[in-house]
Length: 37
Image 1 (spheres, one colour):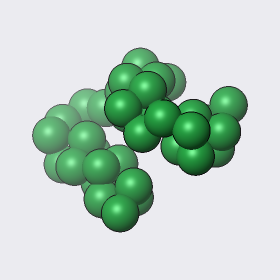
Image 2: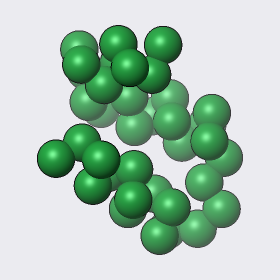
Image 3: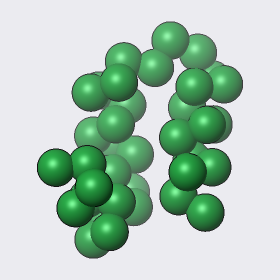
Image 4: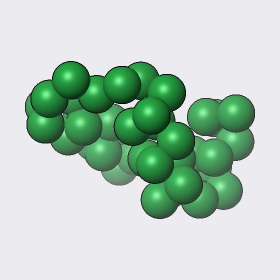
């Protein structure tokens, strides 16, 4: 699911990942954002 979201809609990917991965801190969130670049 995440791979397809990443390809289709980056905002949806981050929203889904924030719940699925249960980011514990801002650094984890920033790391996910960097993956999109």
